[in-house]
Image (tube, rainbow, N blue to C red; front, side, top):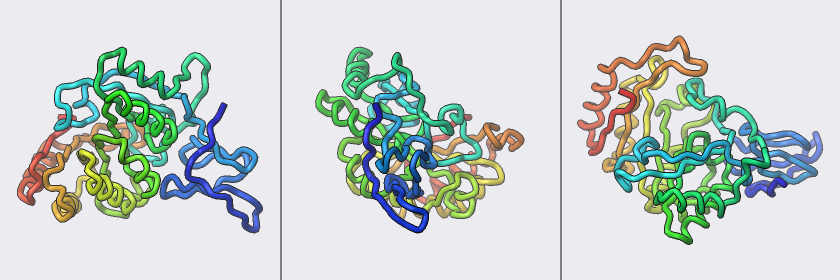
Length: 292
């Protein structure tokens, strides 16, 4: 059984009645029987339902550093869960096998929020990570799990692209202990080309998470010809410092060919090293190099 989705409103125009999904900045207008960009929310009978409820595609135990989160609960392991779906269409997506399709439902793989929390307790891990795909697309499921987890002292980790509207993020944030936001490019034009989404809402999400006291780390993947422009990178670091995020760990990651960028070269190590020097010179206190 599907669950009614949060953050929706009915609209009527010349084409008839539809539902506007207000969860993320795409604000998809969804007609009867159709899904939004994320493929995780469907209009059935004039009501928007989530297809992700109780419906994980992955449950696994990982080192917390794999998220990557390096300066929160260091050395611990975390229960990672995901549901198919994403609200971006990144050209370089490493997890496209689960990010571009709708959630699948199999009776043998359904887990309630309480069962996910019990699994974490059984595995002896202190946290649950919402990761691999985009957690925004399984928002209702994630929110319910975070609340159950809090009851028994588990920490909640959000690994996200940050493309979510302020109101739902404000509702979720009190239950999130740490987050890693993927800041894919600091140039709006490049960001749109690379992901199919605007940059500005992601910056607002970062600011909101910082304001409410969530432990925050940032990842920036340097893709040759897209997000490896060092002038843009410098602007990003200056913005982070201007937002009092100079002590926020910055992960600078090396790109390897994937998805629709199979002919794009691997990021030269010299580019990664130069980026680290720039970040440090501007005042970023914790710079971490990834995929090297």
